[in-house]
Length: 509
Image (cartoon, rainbow, N blue to C red; front, side, top):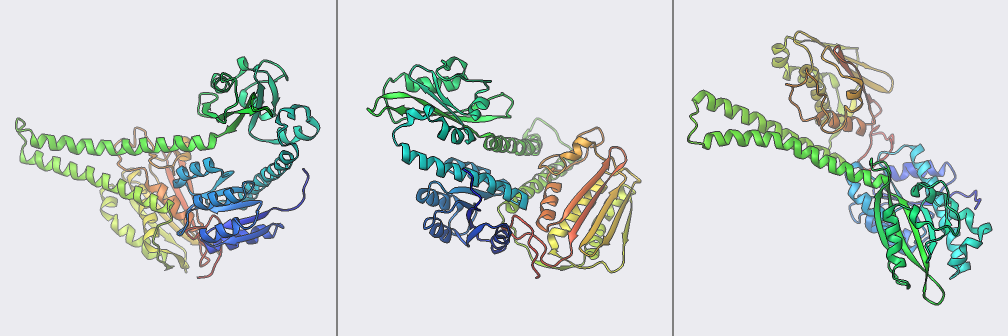
């Protein structure tokens, strides 16, 4: 199966910058690349030519990637399709995989990631073509596969999915190395009775077919957690193998690694659980205060009534902020953020944010110092987003600071980047807290943060905004001594990711 040719690739994406950038990248390595600017054109190209690989964007304005995938696979089943998707699209990524997508690649992706994914996809393509060729040559001789080692073993052994064939007596007829891994066996002997060595659920699938003692076009599938620690999930599918006369010869079991898809499902469940937990507390608190007002047996003074109302307002304000943050994250993931990109001076933005927090600074007696080099250049960005980033970081520097502490804001620039560094003398973070800092709903929990309110979404939004502009955010922190956030934003006009891009493309505005 040695083949030095480069694959023919179809890129279907409605973002011009991504199509052109990826095409140039692949063409520079000898790939033959065609592009389609929307789903309709992608279907037209993908169903008129047998491409080796199709890279399909999941979200397009006219026809979504799922429909394009279905049409291409229906026309050319051996075209290996890769779905390009964002974090919020994991449900459709799972659906795409079930329909027949080879894999998915999250956006944004690096050149190394796309080349590795294309390498794996082309290897799969070569296996499919070789298997199809052999299928045509051998036709109905499936049961003789065990005796054709010289030609078929290489192909069978190179398939990443596990493959096991057993006869009507439950004896092993054929298997590949991946089957050993997924069946958690050291070795299988041909003509060995194998059913008592398999996972009980896989044995059950085989017995469902063997118990019929005749051939029926019916398959059975099940999903299995191999080590019960949510680390390796597989999907096992058993199908009957017929004899030329139509009777049952045995069963073939295909075992596919679905760990990535199952982890996405677990992530979804955890996310729903976290949201429910965060919403429950403020709703329960406000409900409790309302119950006090409605209970005529409880006497409430005017002062208590005012206190309860203020507390309820505070809880509802927190709840509203959380909902707005969740909506913002959703819009970012679905690429529906409306941005007005223009030249901005960062110093006035920082000064306006500092002015906004004057009462908080005075209340905690925190000394804030702004240091700026001369001639800080413009950046090209949306004013509201940059203001939100600065607001969040200064707010955190105040909330997590000590009374009488300090905050230093340093502005500087190089030929390519604007640097903003915000350092506080607050409570700092432990290493394990720092590693989870930009995850949704994560908030450091210790004796010093117990009374500090927040949704745990602010820094996640900050990270997404900085990523959009192809910037970088770094964190240095020492528990008990303070934290420093450093942001680098590109100065080149147009050096940011457009809404459908997976890589940085430099374009002058």
